[in-house]
Image (cartoon, rainbow, N blue to C red):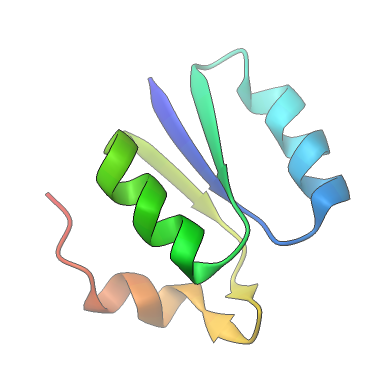
Length: 68
């Protein structure tokens, strides 16, 4: 399973990634540009996102995306 973890705090990124690694391949993104890149590159099966990344609402971001 391909998992995309969107978290801007490096410490939380490390902690959460440790737990997710048992479930599959984990990709990381810390800002909106990295999110765009990772979504196109990896087409994840599961996305786990912090609600706010650098003052951007990930909820609003994903509402605007057309994900298959």
